[in-house]
Length: 151
Length: 246
Image (cartoon, rainbow over all chains, first blue to last red; front, side):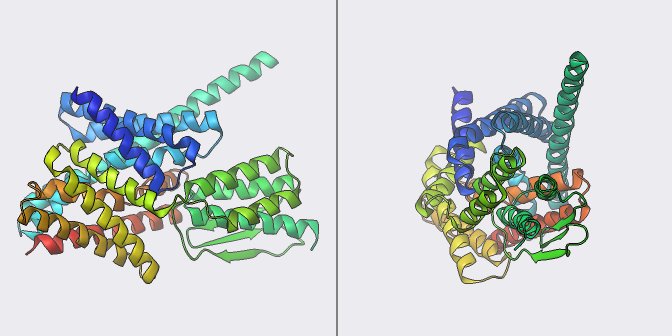
């Protein structure tokens, strides 16, 4: 039950961001789908491994993977789908906690939160990169095969 | 105006529209060069940064430079310009038609109405409260806080051109709404409400674009977009911190 609710809420949140960033109207549903898929993978993996860094990596990877697939399918730029999907993974809570402890002069705790936020941002970036490389490799090998067959 | 000059103007206009709408740098360069090559400008070279575009069409034409003054996020505009360039390359549009279409896109206002954006920001804030395991009783407060923050950021952007000030004030508004709600027992968890309310201000497009530009080898654009994202995040943090420090 909790999982269904999370899926619905992340879907709504991603559509909300699609509207804020003015995504094309017909693509809003797919933006929501990408956001929901990314969040569910992140959330599932975080409960299993209790490591936000790995979970963020996988979440960003899934977001970028679906974004690339939709981009190929609809012949539109890929960022239309990925932007809304990435936002739930952004370490807003961790960054907030870091800021809060800095303000309270508890610098040691603050630095550990800030490091974690930094690691999560890096993991998101790596997830995006890996998905891009992955897609390129797959489509290139398919393209090559087709060329060989034609010859 | 000769055909070639129109082609150069067409490329520049497409590049400018995409850059102003927040496209990735490498996509802008790619689009402009592809458009130029279909118009038989084979020696074209372009250099795109977030603040300006240089396009050199090769001799005997002059190199042109245009400045990009304001950048916003408008994904639909990126998609529209992209489809014009695709149709021009496939020969579906003539050069004149493509130029007319680009002018039409430039003048069109394809944004969602403001009330819908405001509603979307508020709903997203409410959703994030629950996603970050907040309490259901706080959802109305997060809804209001997120909406107030988004309203502030849009209004201040209209009033002043100073960057990062709008985000600072908006984060301050979110934190104040959350603070007073908790004081008057309308909300319980201050942290969760603020995190949810601040989410619509997060520079998501800048972060993704910075990463993708760095990956594509556009270090100047990647670093400057990264700096913009970092400063925006810092402004949000400072706005929240100001309220928390009392």
